[in-house]
Image (cartoon, rainbow, N blue to C red):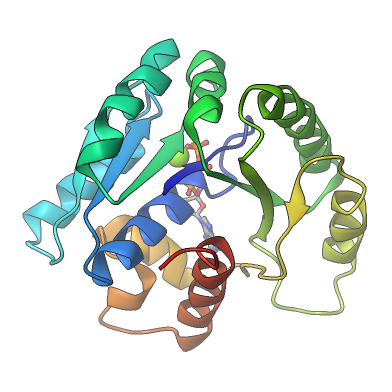
Length: 216
Ligand SMILES: Nc1ncnc2c1ncn2[C@@H]1O[C@H](COP(=O)(O)OP(=O)(O)OP(=O)(O)O)[C@@H](O)[C@H]1O
Ligand SMILES: [Mg+2]
C-alpha cells in the first residue's frame, strides 16, 4: 500500500506520522520503504539517528523530490509491500506528483482557524487529484489536540473538517504529548521509547488501524 502523508502547511505532524506508521508497518514484518519527498530531509534525518542507534527493525529511506516522485515511486512499488511518503509542505510539484500514486493520503492538521484554511486548500488539491487517482482514500487527522477537553477549538476544527468535500476525518485524534517530540529526537516510534506513554501508543495504534483497515 502506498500511503502519502501531506499538508501544504508546515509543522502539522507529517514527518511524525510518516515515520511512526512506517516503523509500525515494519514491526508487522512487512517490507517497508520510507520516501522522504521533503527537501528539508527530516525523515532521512530521523532514519539516520535510528541507524546510529542501531534500532531494529531497520527502515530503508530514500529521498525523492519534485515532479518525478510518482514515476520513481511507481518503479519501487513491486519491490516493497508498503511505501510511506513524507511530502514536503512547500514542494507542491512533489506533493501533486505523489497524489497520483497514493492509495491513501493522510493529512495531519492542527486546530485553529489559520490551519483550517490550509485544510480547505488541501481539500481542493485532493479533489483535482481524485480525477486522476479516484481510488485514493483521502483522510484527515487532527494532531496536537489539547489534552484538556474543555478547550473547544478542537471541536470547531472538527466541525469544519466535516464540511470538506473530499477529505474524511478520522475518529482518531493525536493529542499534544511529549512522547511525539521524543520520537522525533530519538529516531524511534512512540511505541519503541524507553519511557512508554501508553496514551500516545494507543493513539497511533488507533490511527494505524483506521488507515490500514482494508489491508492485511
Ligand atoms: N502530537 C504531538 N505532540 C507533541 N509534539 C508533536 C506532535 N506532533 C508533532 N510534534 C512535534 O511538532 C514538530 C513538527 O512535527 P513534524 O516535524 O512531524 O511536522 P511536519 O509537518 O513534518 O513539519 P514540516 O512541515 O517542517 O516538515 C516536531 O518537533 C514534532 O516532534
Ligand atoms: Mg516534516
